[in-house]
Image 1 (cartoon, helix red, strand yellow):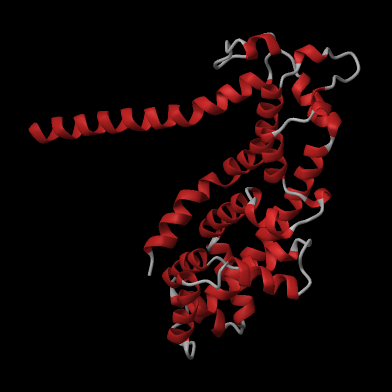
Image 2: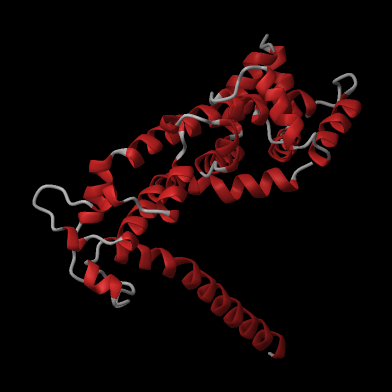
Length: 290
């Protein structure tokens, strides 16, 4: 009975702490949404909490009319989709052979890969290399150096090692080569870890900031996070000019910033529910197996 009470108290305290953490995470975002849809008077007076006051969509209309944020969003979608596809392709191609004990020199290869995870050349040598290859101001300056995350590769390798070897043996008996085995047997069984790593890679590309700032020079190629920082740091007077039939007094810098942040966060949030059923399972299995 005493153990039962202690367990119940633990679960109650644990649930309370989780609820507080969830509230601390959700509250700022709900406040941003409310501010983005509120009028300038309520925003300036600090009256907006979780519900819009003087409901209007002027901030969103100005962002769309200005067009800069939409261009940055298009660039980020391109950067994210292509970057994630390249990441997943090369992560799978690296993890699958390294998961096979029969691979010659496997131990040395794993040590070499692990070395790159612990030690790097540094920012300046990295920039000089990218510049010497003529990749500055192209997205390849971002994609090529980040083709594989070593940590994610080890997670996928562990997942592959946990799959029954009999699957590959039976496929080999039926005449399947390594490519057929990988594409038709291994990958369909690996959807949980693929979904989890896809989300990790996609979120990383969507939030790209520092590398874009270093390697991309053209303003029409800037990512969403760079543009968002510029908007938060300084909202230009042009952003506050009203469109047709919109009063300038209904728009504030705070409203513009809140609307920009909401527009930046929503697309990546929309992807999570699609991968949620695989997410926890994939991370757990990929981290524990092997």
